[in-house]
Length: 389
Image (cartoon, rainbow, N blue to C red; front, side, top):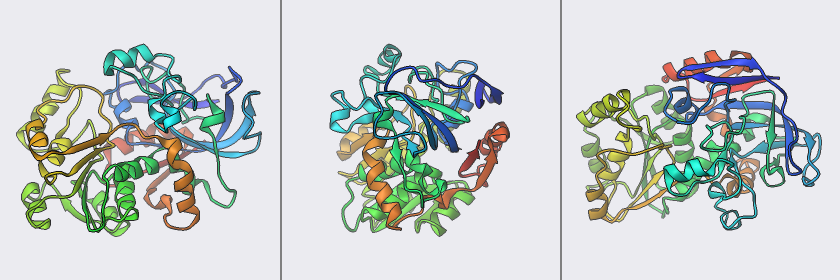
């Protein structure tokens, strides 16, 4: 089969690789009909996530048709159309039973690596380094899905792929980020980053009852989408004193909740942001947390900082004194996708949201390397890229 393989920093290629096979009774093989490039895939492309190996198949947002199942998979059969959560969960451990699927204890065969890095490791992820299991991803023609009896969700025939594809990651991620904000009627939510997760966080905040949502970015194309397609008030942080602007827009109180949908590769122009970039270039730091610093400083007293943006290591110069002094609540982590797929699929079927609104580009899988390059370098135009095998 053809698959998009990682070869090194800023080096990916579509190659011929062996077809996946059933390895245990809870496996399924899915013929992929639609997949996508996620913003967090760019962290792999840029070389920020450790434990990648040459030849690793990328991609964690994918869906398709069941081709084969192990004998332990009974709720789907050959020919069923399914979406696949990017987190791999066993369904039976302490955490899965509490719907904390991204904290699964049993899906990561390399758990000791994540345990060393993070104290306790979480679930495996498709196509996202060996620290997170080393499973082949879905930017390919076929994929093996372990724990398929838990991790495959059937979708109705009348809904096209592009309406349900993002149930695999970014729609639940944005929704969980908004849910973590504990939104009350009348609340103002500020969202750093108007990429795909940020746009879904904006949409979800409104679905959950926010009165106002403010989208913060420096890429004008993304700001236009946040305003025109999601109903947010928007601000380019490069053109204003952001703290003063937010203070003025919230009557001197600050946003009730702040969402960092940027993560480890945040852009910025002040001294701290410049130092972040220098340290990362010199391999003296792993992450550039400029957006998180701003969210902590801007959030109102007693507010919530929600973090769906990916962080991979140790963060520098975080204003924890401000967080403590204001009594902020932090909520973060990989998305418990399995928990959200049914409820968000119901919202799609009711017409409350059409997730395909953010697709800006479509490519054949054979052109995936070019799509990665353009996505990484032309952010004003490229918001969400869909690939067709």
